[in-house]
Image 1: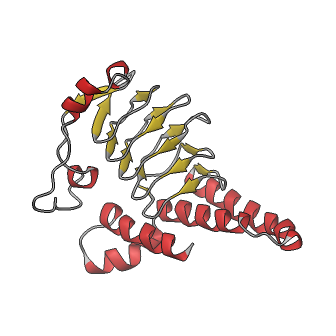
Image 2 (image 1 turned 180 degrees about the horizontal axis):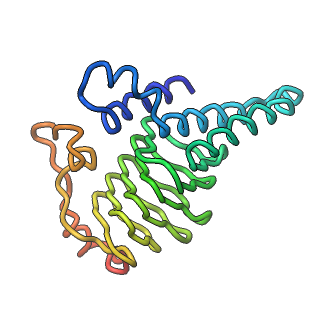
Length: 207
């Protein structure tokens, strides 16, 4: 749990905090999104307790922490969800994440709703404000979902999608973090063009 928390805080410092030294080291702990993520990590860890008696009594602190966090932030993250390190709630309120699998270095913004049918989300995914993911779908890695998009079918790797229903919008040769201006692309590293992916991926045409 603690390794995931360290990765969450490190990513939050990149996305939610200014470049000021003191902001990066102190304000990150006061962000509502950080509270939501830490609440999820604690509740998920408490669910992992296998001792029957301790597991029974663990429900009380889980209910208190989760209820307090939801009241303050408006963010519901199921403690049954499996979320990799570097998870960031960029802006709070109106966020719902059911039991699903989410990879490393993913970010969600205000108003994001994942339907119970969502199978999994890959690594390095940014879900923009107001986006909705509906149905039994899978989202690949290095994906950017534009604000207010409605995703109803699978999304391949290395793509940007936008619209209602969401469609592949433009080619991508860089990572999601680079698009956000949060990291430099390593020299010599390239990413597949999403336009090529669209032509070769039959499901992408239906997005």
